[in-house]
Amino acid sequence: DQQVKQNSPSLSVQEGRISILNCDYTNSMFDYFLWYKKYPAEGPTFLISISSIKDKNEDGRFTVFLNKSAKHLSLHIVPSQPGDSAVYFCAASAVNNNDMRFGAGTRLTVKP
Amino acid sequence: DAGVTQSPTHLIKTRGQQVTLRCSPKSGHDTVSWYQQALGQGPQFIFQYYEEEERQRGNFPDRFSGHQFPNYSSELNVNALLLGDSALYLCASSLGGSMNTEAFFGQGTRLTVV
Image (cartoon, rainbow over all chains, first blue to last red; front, side, top):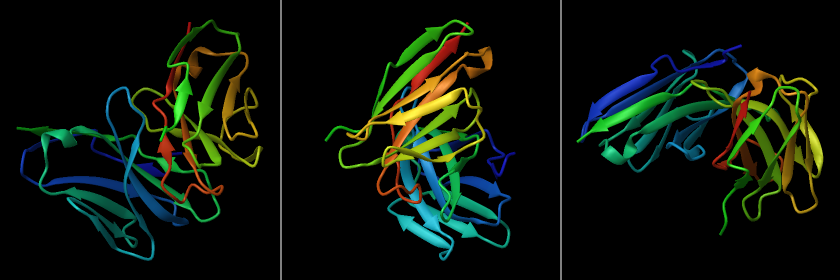
């Protein structure tokens, strides 16, 4: 069952512009959300997270927005850099449940 | 500070065989979770080990088993391999038996079943 969905398998953005990656979830018990970045031949690397008590979390060029009513979160990267080119995974978990669910990923390409 | 290390990096096995994958967590971490990532999909939770016990298990058959050692390292065993078990197996470590914190992933073991 796909409880976390990333409907865009790929996204291409020009360097310096904003990248917006989207993620939808179906399980209302999810209360913690994470974004991971994955380069080829490497494991996923934690990028940023947000708990359900917040609607925004910012870390440098990366901002995650959470819309609980729509069960939707997004990752904004501003400005985008070529080094941001990677696969981005959205993940979600519920309190006292260690079964973290991942989306299928979105491949971001930032063109110079 | 060593991150999460997994061995081997690649493995080819024949259908019906058994395989053991190994993971050493990041220094200071005591919790190890295993994931299976099939091609084109996100990682799927197999199980988590904390204090040498399996704390939680995802939707995987009993052919998948594991172990955690006193030094917090972990093994994933898969018996009676099927072609569909071909995937990237990821190990993630964290602290305190929770995944609701930043987890660090290893580079993965690419298993091919022929």
